[in-house]
Image (tube, rainbow over all chains, first blue to last red; front, side, top):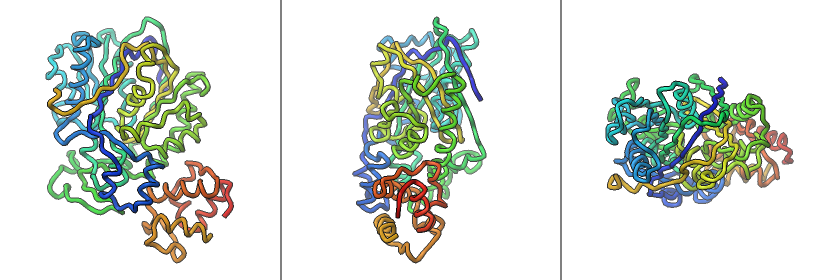
Length: 359
Length: 76
C-alpha cells in the first residue's frame, strides 16, 4: 500500500529512556555461551548496554513522565491535544486502553480521541500514518503520538537470542498541519501468515497466562516460558533481508527520488549484524545510516526509530531540516517506510526516567 | 576443509562436524552460532556473504558451507 500526505509535519520529538543501564558483560552468566563466543557476539551483534525498567514500571509511567516534562517546559499545551495515539505491545491492562489511563491521569480534555494500537517494530511508521490520516479531518489539529514498550518484562533473562538486545523506551511525537504544502510518501505492508515469527504465546484469550504457561522450558539453548517473547531469529532475518530492500526501492520510485536525495536513513535497529547486512544489500553508505542504537540503548521495538532520530540528530533538528527515509519492520509481520523532511522542530531530545518516584 | 572444521569447532567444541551432517536440524548450530560463523568466514576468507544467502540450508553441512564461501568469492 502506498500513501501520500500533504501539508502535515512533525513538530517535536522527545524520547524517554529508563535511567538504569544493564550491561551484557554482567549478564553473560545467564546464557549458555562460552567466553570467546560471548565476546564475538558482543562485537558482531552490538550486545553491550541496554536500558531496562524495573519490574513495576509500565508504559503509561514513561509516557506521563514525558508529557509532564513537555507541559512544564511549555513545549506542549495540554488543551491543544486532539488525539492521543499510543502504539505499544505492552499495555498496562487488557482493558481499558492505556491511552485513556494517560488521558485521565493528566486531566486532558474529554474532546479527545484515545487510541491504542498494537504494533511492534513498524509501530512508529504505523503511528505516523494514523496521525496523518486523522489530520485529514478538520476536528483534529494536533496529534500526540506515543510509542512505548517495556518488553524487557516479557523476555526471559535466560533467552540469549533476545534478552541481551532488548531495550525499554518511550517517545512522544507531535504531528500537526503545516502551512507549507510539504509532501510525505509512505509504504505499508502486512503479512499475518508469518505472525508466529515474533510472538508471546500466552497471556491473551487464546492461551491465558497460568502457572503452567509460566514454567520455564528449554528451547535449544534458551530457557523461556510461554509468557515470554519468542523470536524465530532465522525467520525474522530472512524476512528483513527479502522484504526491506525492495520496500526501499518501491518508496524511492513512488516519491520520484533516488537514494542520493536522502540525507539520513533512520531505520529500526534490531541488531548490528542485521542492520549492516541490510545496509550492504540496499547499497547505502554507513555514514548516512546510523547503527549505534542497539549497543547504546538496546532494541526498543517501535521506539527505536524515534530514539535513533533524537540520539543521532537531536538538537540539529531544531535548527535545520533534512530529507530522511524512515523504516520499521517486525512483529505482525509488518513493514513500512516513509520519505519526508524533518526539521525546525520545537524540540528534539532525550530525557531519562529514574523510577516511579519521578512521577 | 580442515580450517573450516576448526572454525566450526571453535564455535561449538562439543560437536564433531566431520562425522555429521544436517547441522541446523540436529541443533549443532543455532541462529547465533550461524552469525558467529558468518563473521569468522567473512574475516578469514575476505568475503561478504549476501544476506539473502543466510538461510539454514547453506549451513547444513561442510559441503554446503564450502559452496556458500565459494559463491561469495572465497576459496576453501
